[in-house]
Amino acid sequence: MKISFNKTITLGVVIGLIVIAVFVLGIVWKSGSFSQSIDMPSLSASKAAPEPVNIQALGLVQLLLEEDYLSALTGSQTSVLGEAKLVKPLHKVSSTTLAAQFEANELVAHYRFGQSTLAVSGYVTGVRENASGKPVIELEGTQPMFDVQAETSVRHKQLAFALRSGDKALLICDLNGYVLQVLHLKNCAPPHVREDAERYATKSIQTLHQWLIAGGAPTFENDQHGDLSRFLASLYLLGISLPADSVCFAEQVELSRECSEIVTKIAFVDVLDALKGRGERWFEWLAISTEGLPRVK
Image 1 (tube, rainbow, N blue to C red):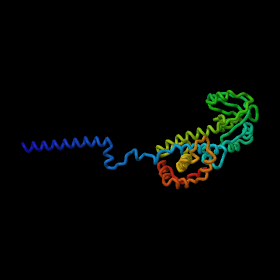
Image 2: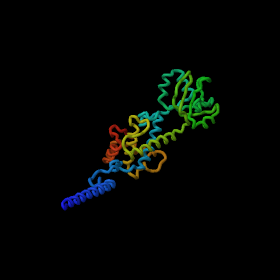
Image 3: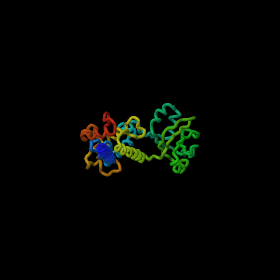
Image 4: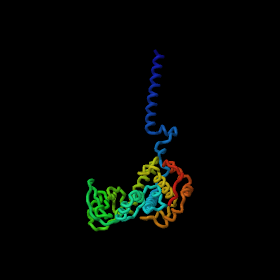
């Protein structure tokens, strides 16, 4: 009996120690001390960007993107956005000339104007609302019965119906089609070109900022081939490679001549050399290759 009693006590002590050990381990595991005690990397550390996002560099990227957008509208061969067909060039033409081109040869006119954003000027012959509730501004064509039909969005309704017959109008439009000798345009809007560039750049910079923080695959719209993401990443690295007192970081609404002269002389390989490994870490974080990146233009 004595021996069995001692065995019972010993077994009880062992079970008690195991219970206490499991309890303590549970607390340590929940607090994170367990993983740290065996040098396991923390999840937050493995998901941290190479360095904090540089807001000054983001501001410079926005200005550079606006200028490239405007260059693309002019059909400039130096525009990265234009070369990648992310922004269509702006083609200035009168409504009568445009209608005459389609009347003469529809296929040739489609080839000439179909890939461009059109800046169409002409005299207003009327304004109406189509079946979709969108305003349509009718512009002078080659014949009175075949006016050019310029469809706008509902948000431009007040502006459209403020026009009167005989007014001269200028609209930024896309080609919609040529049906029964009538030329149709769509997405027409007042010519706020600078505002459009700012809007495009602002939206892109917001996505870039999120991408720099989160890493991984980019999520830019209409960027199936990755041209925009690679361009923006290269511009950002250009920005962080410049000294903090660079003229490019001075407060400016538009890109200054001094800053433009600086960035146009920099090849991307020089940016990577100046960053001494930081550039490669950023591109690894952003999951894109450094090969074939464009020279800043």
